[in-house]
Image (tube, rainbow, N blue to C red):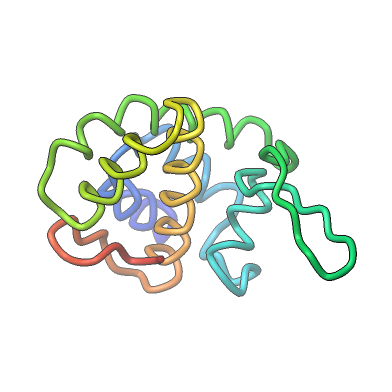
Length: 139
């Protein structure tokens, strides 16, 4: 019963359908194993790889490591939800619009999927649905 409540809360996030939400809850649970939202995003393979030499970090392409099925489903949901979110006048909508203006479409989709993974971590961790009107749940 608790898993279905978590999946319902995840479907309040734009781009999260029932399939993505149930797969994420089945794989992650309540997200206690991740200390931060970035840890979940890294586990899904949605963060840039880092190469550090001489104390100067260089960000490379997305790592594509981790759960391939979840990453693919999240990116497909994000690809469908990004235009819908960008036309809304919310904090997340303004962020998505600015992101699409300054980067390539594919990079924007993956970056938005990263953002949604962090929001999903916050929703699972706090046990509250996503608030689309206010500030995003995770920065």
